[in-house]
Image 1 (cartoon, each protein chain N blue to C red):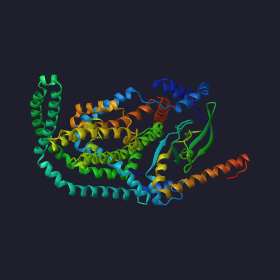
Image 2: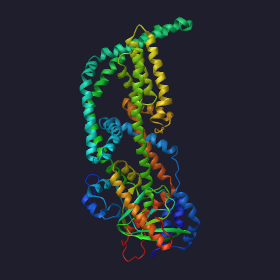
Image 3: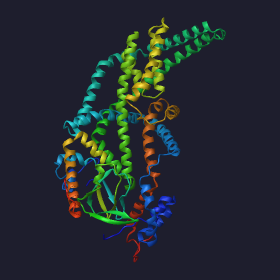
Length: 160
Length: 429
């Protein structure tokens, strides 16, 4: 990838990397290029904190490479809930509400993450309705999957 | 869980202590693992969450730094006026045209095409306006010496007639021969002003071609603004990333609301003053209304200058009838009241967060540091530097974020030093 994505975005490579991520898999290449302009790329080293419990949630993170550990902190000790691999995303509730972060996310290995800022997605809804609804529908599917899994694990009856 | 992470006593210490070296040393211990640290951390949960959400306002140190930085920038900008002015104007144009571009994108235009269409529309409008009004403006400018002399004499005669009227009612003023003294002084001043204005107009005309850059810059701001924001955000460390992005987003929205409100306010001001001036029978009511509304963009001082111009024109157009000047002044005062109590809250609201006292002081400082250019540039420059200063102040005074930054820095340094020493298993330096 170019060192200067501001001047020369390598959309083909980006599309290959991110086109298969669940959030973006229904987007056409042209739609993806619109959303790609607002994606931030961040590098984290192993053990570095990505976000912490109680922090304001502003963005969703997508794992591009490496691994991320999402944990719950009990009595000062972090207990891993899930380990995320390339293609997974986390912090998605930030896109839906203003509630503070409820878990700790930490780089389990050196990793590269793609970040989508909530305000950018909200702005997208003002200008690109079809594109934003595709992303939000994928988000809803993802949350439905989580709800179903949780219900199956706990034995609760689902009415959704 | 294959690997258990612990938030350590070191991080708690980082929250409470300003000594960064000590923090790094303790972070070092923490990463090697330690039961004591784990015990410390059990007590630290509450503090961690409290600091995670802390959001202190910036203090007087930040404000003083911002003022100093603004002065320094204005001093430097004097040399680069040909570039700075188009840049700031392009930024204003970007905020003005952004809603139109958003609208086009909503109708299915791609960002690049929407930006191009909006800029072409603006340039076409500007071109038409130039074709229509340029001959008249050039004609007026060619007679600027005579024209300015005419208006200055009109203002002087208004001032003198007012003083003479006062002298007739107050014997103290008559004994002081105030009108005779002022007559002599104003006579010299009128000549000096006429001589000053012409070189000033020529000076402005020399760098006016640089204004052609404005639509070009605005086009690229519109087209690549989002990418540029992403590009700039790369310089922000991971720990401050989300907070900084949120603050910048709020500033962006506030600036958009401000410029949109400013245009609405200008239209309202122009219409009100133009109608008022037309009713009392003043010449060129629309031009005068527009001029004073645009001058009002510079808070406080701009309004005074605008009022002075309207009254001067009234005094020059009707030299035998001073009541016209008083009517014009009265109308202007009514407009200011409407502006402050009705129009301003309806349009701009409180989006301009600069305290009135600071605004006035900054205008004078700008004038002292960089002359007329300083007067014009000081508030936009101050606004931008204030935003940057407050953002930096906010993230740097948040001790939890600072501790996270240090932790990340430590991890990167440790990674960079891995395996440098021959035969060592523990990586220390």
